[in-house]
Amino acid sequence: MSTRHTTFTASIIAIALASCCCSCQSMPDDAVRVNRCPAGHNDLEPVSESTGTSIFSGMEDDEPEMYLLGKDGFLRCRTCGYTTDYPTWERESGDPKSFAVPLSSLMSEIPVPTPDLLNGEPEYSQTIKRGHVEHEYMRYWSKEPHDKVLSRLEAYLATAGVVVTNRNKSMLYEGGVIIKGKWKGFAVDFEVVIPTPGNTTHLRGSLEPTGRLDFNTTIVPLDKK
Image (cartoon, rainbow, N blue to C red):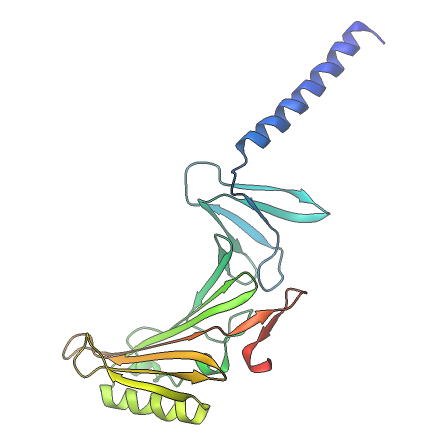
């Protein structure tokens, strides 16, 4: 082998080693491997909230898309819209039927006023952490009177099988009502208030937890548990 060829080969090896070392040095200590969203999609899009490099992509065990997250970065699933800063995954939408991991029927079927009586669209959100749906939330603003919104909610909760454990007046808003209870063994919390006299009525509700992941990363909704 010629001296020139030997020198060239050594240079290639040195560059490869240097590149590897640089990659290792830039890897955050808190990096975590993530390659699928809670719905099982591997169509992940890295997004960084900082100017520094906080998300790394690569290949491992033949997975086409694998990301390593640092503390300042998060991922978004291009297929279903869940985002994560890991280990928490979240999604928000105005359509309760659009979640790849289905919302519980209790939250998704809460009666909502017709669009002409709404002040903006209703909001729904879901939080998943370490294989469990930990929290669901919904709210809307209505032009209807407080009493009408409250009576419709209470009728719905009774029909849905919610066991009310507490019904108290709001400490923050005059005339507001807070309802706490259980549904299939899970805690629910609702509030109907008018934040400002003469303003629209605000209804919000939350439920936790609402499901679990099996070992195949498939959500088992609460209703099927």
